[in-house]
Length: 583
Ligand SMILES: Nc1ncnc2c1ncn2[C@@H]1O[C@H](COP(=O)(O)OP(=O)(O)OP(=O)(O)O)[C@@H](O)[C@H]1O
Ligand SMILES: [Mg+2]
Image (cartoon, rainbow, N blue to C red; front, top):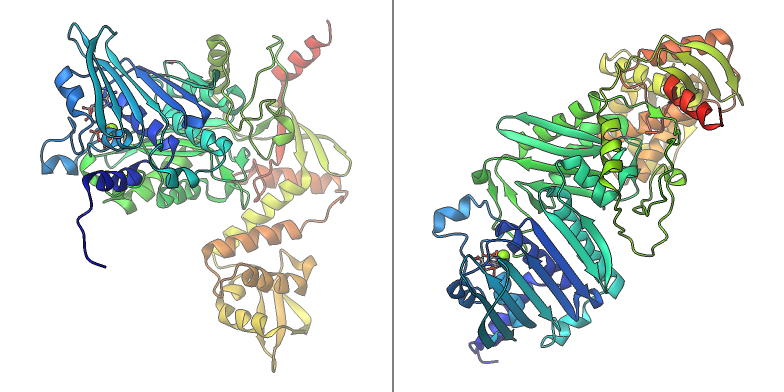
């Protein structure tokens, strides 16, 4: 085929395809423009998941007539001037492509006014100017997009269901609403309000407007600075997690980004507090030198390149660890408040605590929660009451329920302890400290046990011999696919050789032939769980020992899998509870 230079309109459509993948991309670009224009109110109205209409009205600085005439031109931008600016970008936009791309593939009406007397109205169709006139309007910009992709039907065919496309839009608005307490965000879809996050005085309050107070109460504030990097925002308590990563919001200099390395660093900060396969909720903004972030990597600017990844890793994980250290991680027993709050719609979350969360009645995935600000404020005050010192004990044991729960009194009030979870935590920490000190206690078997294993297990065992032996096992080859086990770790003595096989299976299941740190940790957690017998009645002395061991743990509040070890009912909670009963 002979080479042809493509016509301008086709070039523009190709370029538009890179920036605008779906209706949510339009919403993202327009919100970013409004934020760059210093608006403190952004109203987004969509119809038909954005396909028939997207309208965004802001009260930002607006544009003069000359600027408005230029804004749909490709590579026309007010945000950078020369090549040096690309390496220190403080605005969300800089490519001068978004409006050009959108106007290429839709009908666009722009009304904008800066401080001039008269505003400007421009109407565009598929990249061509149809109308240009002066209009009266308030300062700010309103952009209405109709019939997105009307001239690129192939793109339409790739879109998902309206529900999915709408979820993408809601998500985009949410990401910006979460990070901007200083901006009033309003999202309306087919006449129905989806998000309303008014201007609030602070970060946490704002998050509660988007996610609801229930979730707000599970969040811990983070504010940590080191090496000219500030990590600011909230993370969820380790007991409040999701089955996926969809409620994790990461920003660099208030730009929403995806970055698996930084996400990893957040998990590192939780260290061993998270249950395997569970994901914390977080909203974290990293403020750092603009010159260390290259945002010119991806047409939609969703990825960035970072010059100081290692440093960031350390600072982010420290920020998370410090925030967790600073609060009491004891799970409070829920005591209803005396004021009867009206039932509120709740953000639908799949969490460890799902049974305690009311399910939203709305079918939408994202539901805004609007409450009178005083409720949000009250909730916030409760959250930021200075936490009492987190010392757990001393405990006075009052009894045991169902051979599972220990009832005790401690300086905070009444305490209910799950003896198995507590035992697991104690074993886990004892084992880890033995492992760190290379002093895992070993129990020699009176007569060594010969184990027949599969060829895969055989090679896994030999390939990880040193690692497995560091856990307190001793074993040797014993002919073809047989191993001779001569010692087992004392702590897990009850399990005998089955634990050894379980460890091999765990390594095999994970698909890795070599055991890494994460794998090792998973095995230890799993072993601790397996070492506890359910429904065991403990003597008072055993219970006392258990509780004092728990008190001595670095993190006594949850078992190695993230389940709470104890529930605390403060004296104030008890008083509240009894006053409710009528006297
Ligand atoms: N809501 C708005 N208020 C004021 N000015 C705006 C607004 N939206 C766009 N503009 C002006 O129009 C220009 C072009 O916008 P466009 O989004 O196409 O490019 P950009 O934001 O500069 O870069 P990018 O393509 O990376 O978004 C902007 O640089 C800005 O000057
Ligand atoms: Mg832009």
